[in-house]
Image (cartoon, rainbow, N blue to C red; front, side, top):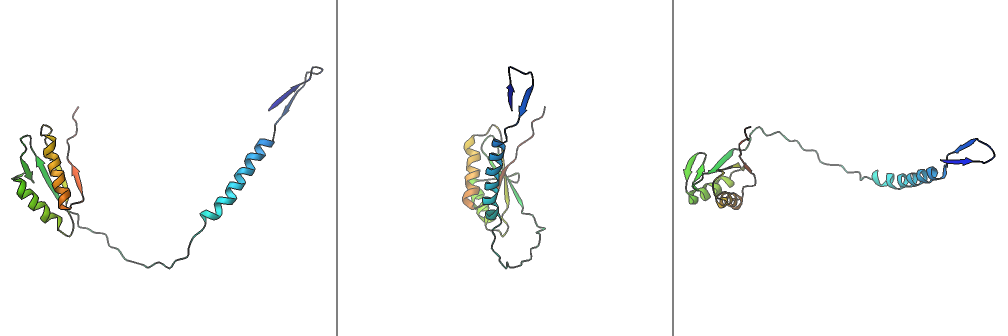
Length: 137
């Protein structure tokens, strides 16, 4: 907006400069003209139709634990490292791979939990999660 004040009269003249508004509108118009054809491009395909059924069977969960002394447990049953590796290899061969839940005592050494993670990964099991407890106020 510009204000012109003549020294002779006391009238204020208000004018809106339309040039910048027109420039912006023209730029937007050009951008839309260019982008709309690109957005609407598509290739006509005759895609195959397939039926899919929802699986009602959920994968089983394996709970692996390690206590503060470094002992390993498979579903609350003590297990040796060798037997742990063997069971993980067998579980990885199942049709529907299990989900491995790892519970680690907060006072155990980090290497004990990492050992479990390594064995799960080396067995070829793709799904792994950690079990923690909610902090009580």
